[in-house]
Image 1 (tube, helix red, strand yellow):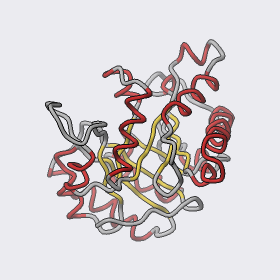
Image 2: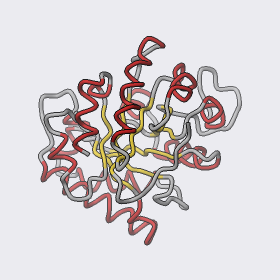
Image 3: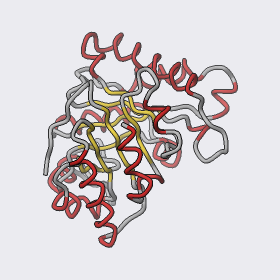
Length: 251
């Protein structure tokens, strides 16, 4: 099922399953879908592996099913890649672009990330655009400047809250034992909001800002109560209903 995303008042809770899951995981998706039906004031999405998009789309009634990445081109000699038309045809309603793992592992440039967002928009997909800084940038005191520039470089010119969300990933706080404080999150999300307003005008107020740094049931309530946090992008905790459903409830 394709469902229309509403902005900006509604929280958006998105699971990113990364390279996890097969058909045997569909009951987990079913439990998440049931929870979404019971919390209609919250938008819930799950970015599943490409092999599961169609099965997830056929299973879902209340959640947004998404892709984890796309190629900026609509078609061509790009072995192993998936285009926006392909993932939409499979059933995806949105895609993640610019995830920190893709930027680091595949050396994606800001131009490439922007191209992916523009491709998604051309084909009617909503977009979650990820930005964030590594530890050395934060320790150098350049975190806000670097993330601001990253977002400016990646934002499509016609972006608005009807189809775009921005997810902040503090790379230095993911799997390192360090954690972002509520003040850290509030400060960076204020920068993201200011950047969206400066680049997009009034449309920048409608862009939902998600936090994506090791979100768990234990810290979700505090994160979701932080100013300018309109939702969360959840990794490992989205893989089971036991850990993902409490996060939806907090939203």
